[in-house]
Image (cartoon, rainbow, N blue to C red; front, side, top):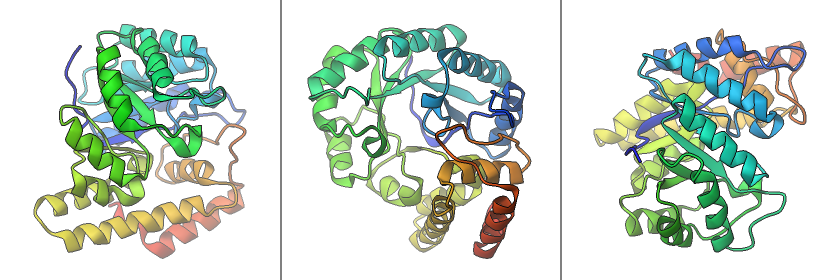
Length: 305
């Protein structure tokens, strides 16, 4: 297995759709160029932000292949999320990701039939990770969406014995207490932080990298935050963390939801990732204008210059 540390910002990318709901593969090159422009070196594709559960297996494979083609020869590296409710589908996606040249794979837990204890979760992840034995494997812990809330210290302890390519956990979990326990008990594991709205807390406790959706369009906010913390300027770091909170609050507070709002912001910035796919909702043109006005009111467009 190749060693990998997800340091710095990792953008959890959107899956681009046309107005008719079909995948707009041609936009991937624009997405990749936008990330490189904003000095982001990792893309986490086909995850929550990528509406993975609303994609077919073939769409997921084609999107992954397009991302690898679009980033070939650049500094941008691609991590492919392969989680699904079917472990065998996840294993097939994992094998495909290795074949096309991804640098790592990640998988959230099956969430319809849920693993009843950590041992079952480890067995699921071991099967998925075995599809790409040459790549680092990350478990994607996001209990708010999967409904699976198991002990991550126990997962790491058991997982490292059964999953040879286990690299760590994508930590989209507000449990700072357990995050500290995992960091200190398993210092060799990579635990990228997955909560944009309190990145500062994760970094203060020892996170080295972060995976998030707002890094697609708000990267300058977080680059400043990281630099400020690095030089010991906590006051400045707090200012940018508060800006992140205002941004997330504005997007999440829309009647059509965060996903549609975030994709609308991408369109405002010239990257047409299109609407969300059902069951997520998308804004009307009038709602997009209202969202722009709200973003202007909080100062978003000046924060991201």
